[in-house]
Structure formats: structure tokens, C-alpha cells
Image 1 (cartoon, one colour):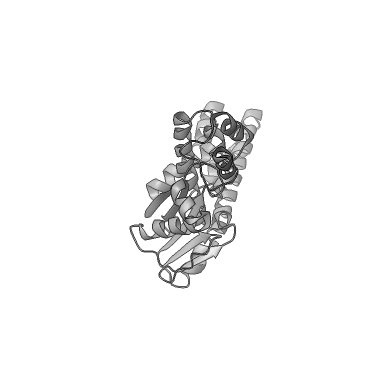
Image 2: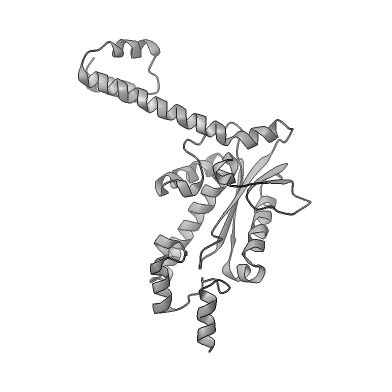
Length: 257
């Protein structure tokens, strides 16, 4: 068998153990390299499977206690000086598998985008909620986050028996929930919600960058980076800035004086 044929064979998903044993006996350097690369790829895939199983710990724990519909909830955008807070809630199929899924902040943009499309396509139900700067100013960021999470959960197609939430307790009697510290790195449902919220909000901020150029929103996503602060000094406050956040609040006070 030619090396190109072996390469194509190893790239397929139907390589039998017998064929692999025969290829291992092949003395050609090119074949040895291809076989080694194949095993390395398979080892990596198995590691991802094991990590995914670890992420399912909380879901499986509560499934075993009799809960049937479990959703994950997470937010993105509590800290920025501009743009909305975005909350996502998602119900995944119990046998779903999203290779490489973890806390959205630890993923590349390309991987987040890939997972976003896959999660949306395969989820039983998902909801994404925006909380605008005016609402954040009205309620404060902590309460606004709770309001967004409650709204997202209540809008799901199916009422969850349990909501797994990243860090924040809901303090609601009508929603059965569990708060998990760093849940986006410990729960597959919360991790999926974090990806949905992150990608959705990043796209919003990239669009805002075209409407309000000069603040570098396409790169900082509204956070107070050096370029963002420079833009504030040069262009002032724009309509998506959070008026109750420092240093925006200080700028307003100076303008009034």
C-alpha cells in the first residue's frame, strides 16, 4: 500500500485493529510517522472524552437523584464599562458530546464559534437574554444578573427541575437551583451556557465597534483597556456606556461641574 493511501486510511474513522497491527510492522519511516501520529491523535481524543466525563459530574449527580431536566446558566459581561450583560440558559441532551468544551474564557475564538454552532444545533432548549446598560444602572449589576438568569430560565422551552448556576445564588423559591463556584469549568451545562453567552456578546460588541468606532470595542468587548480609556478621553461617552460604572460616573460628574 502506498504511503498516500495509508494516510487517507488513517484519516478515516474505520481503521480496524488488524490493519493497525499490519501497519505497525511496516519498516518505512513515512508509515511509522503516520502510525505514531494516528495514535497521538487518538490519545488526545480519549483525553477530551475523559475531561468531558469530568464535566458531567454535577449533571450525573443530580440525574441520579431523580432530576430529569437540568439546565446550565451563565453570564458574560458583568465587568465591562460598555455594552449589555448577556445571560444564557441551556438544556443539553444527557448523551451530548462537545469535544473540548470548558469555560469559554479558556477557549480560542475559533473553538468558541465552533462549539456555539454545535450547542445551538443539538441543545434541547436554549435562551439568551440581554440586559442593557440602562437596566444595569437601574438595578445594579448584581441584581441585573439575577434578573437576567431568572428570565433566561423561565423562557426555556421546558421547565427545568434544576438549574446549575455559575457562582451566583438566585434566592428564588420558585426555581430550584444550585450555585457552583467556577461552575463554567466544572459543569458541562454551565460551560455550554458560558460559550453561548460569550459568543453572542462578542458579536454584539463587534457590531457596536462599527457604530461607535474609536473605543476598540471589537477587541476589548467593552472592558476598560488602555485603548478604551483613551477613546473615552478623546470621544467622550457613547450611548452604550454604563453610566453607573467608574470611570464613566466620574466623567459625568466632571462634565456637570
